Amino acid sequence: MVATQNIGHADASDQRQWTLMWREDGGLMPSRAVPDSALLAADSWLVDDGRVRGLDHHRRRFVAACVEASGDSPARIESFWRDAIAALPRTERWFPRVELAGPEPARLFLRVRPAPPRTVNVTVCLTEEFDPRSHPRRTGPDLSLLAHLRERAAARGAQELLLTTPSGLVLEGTAASVVWWEDDVLCLPPPELPLLAGVTSALIQDRAAELGVRTEHRRRTVQELDGREVWLVNAVHGIRPVTAWLGRPLRAGPALRAASWQTWLDGVPD
Image 1 (cartoon, rainbow, N blue to C red):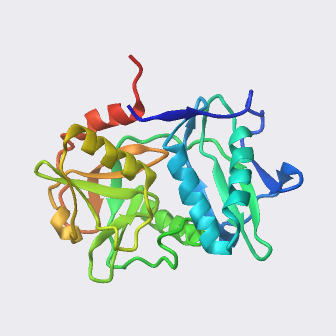
Image 2 (image 1 turned 120 degrees about the horizontal axis):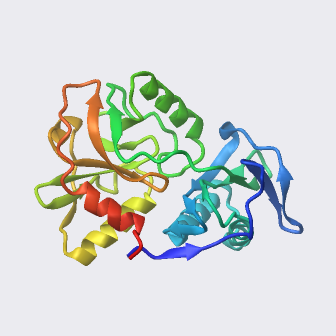
Image 3 (image 1 turned 180 degrees about the horizontal axis):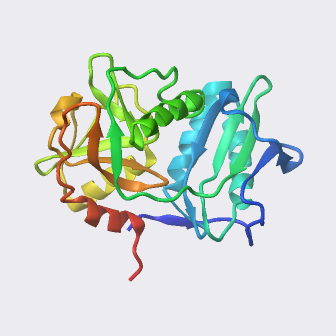
C-alpha cells in the first residue's frame, strides 16, 4: 500500500479556486494568481479528502527546484511548504500547486484548485516535433508551452502529446511520465535523458521492487512502442493505459496489467 499523509485545514472555502502569497514574517495571505509565464518552479499533487500519495517526494522535488532556480535557502522553502500544507482543504478532491515566481525577488505562492475530472485511459498525439522545453527537469518555466501543446493535442482528439528527443527517443508526456511493458519487464526512459523526476513513476518503481517485478531503463523510439502496453502516469490521474495513438500508424497494446496496478495505486479500502 502506498503511504499517504493526512493534511489540511478544517473546511474548504466556498470559493472554488484561490491563491495565497507567502511572507516569511506574515505567512499566507490572499493574492492575485501569477501568470504561468512568471513561474520559476512549481509542483502539483492530488488531495483526495485530505490524503496525498508521495507528498514527501513532492516536497523534496519542489525544494530542490526552488534552490536551483533562485538560490533560495532550503529552510525558507521548507517553512513555506509547512504553511502551504496546513492551509489545504481536508475534504473533496483538489489539485493544489505551489509556485516560485519571478522576477526578483522571487515570491512563493499556493494556488488551490479543484482537481480535474479523472480519466482512466488516454489517447496520445504523436508529432514529428521534438521536445521544445527549456527546463525539462524542472516544472514551472515551460508550463505555458506545455499547455499549448496539450491544446494542440486536444484539437486532434487526444488528451496528451508525447515528447521525444531530436533522434526520436521516447521521453514523457506534457504532464505525465511514460512507462511500458516489454514481456514481464517494466520499462522507463533512462534518467540521463532530459526528464522530470516523476513522483507517481517513482512509486510504481518502488512497488515493482516489492513485487519482484524486473524494472529496466531502455532507450526506445516511438515506433518501438508499437503493440505494447504503455502507461502515462501522474499525480492527478494515476495510471492511464494508452488506448490509442494519433498521428502515426501505431497500435495500442492491450492493457493487461493496468487495472490491478490502478487498484493498488488508488488504495481501495478493505
